[in-house]
Image (tube, rainbow, N blue to C red; front, side, top):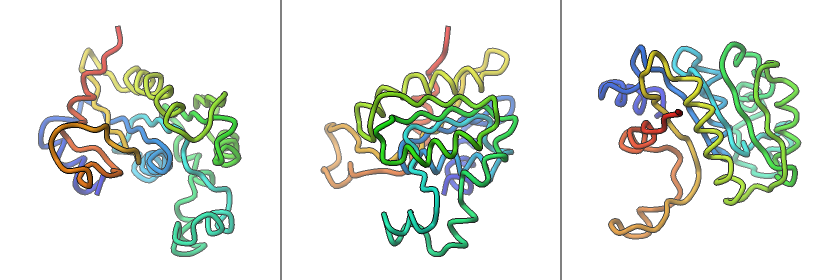
Length: 195
């Protein structure tokens, strides 16, 4: 969906086309997805930030936590962001996780596999909304610093699994967890500009 639908749609709207570059950010499983997207599609993603990425260190660990997380050991191996972290070489990467996060062991394993210039922020916190929210501003600032070219405003896509805040409009079930923002939200995030 991201590669074949969202990014092309945004590019048709003038977002994410040269000289503008695309940065992706995700939270939890979205953080894993942002890293995976950057590893598998280096020509599309110029910078990546992951907040509390849901990273397991083995297929058995993933299967014990969620039997349906991967179809097979081969599927896990193909999409293991730790094993394929070298694919992020030459691209700005920021990863943040709390020490009390259940995915912290996976994040530490990823940190040791990332290119040496990656920014890894391991600190106080857990896998919860307060940690996620505290890491959004520095992650967006990181992306903005790394994708701005020649005075152009950045284009940021956020891949997340969080609940939308209550708002007037659609009934509650339409505001359920989402995996990706729409182009309209990407345009709104595009206003993030550093001094």
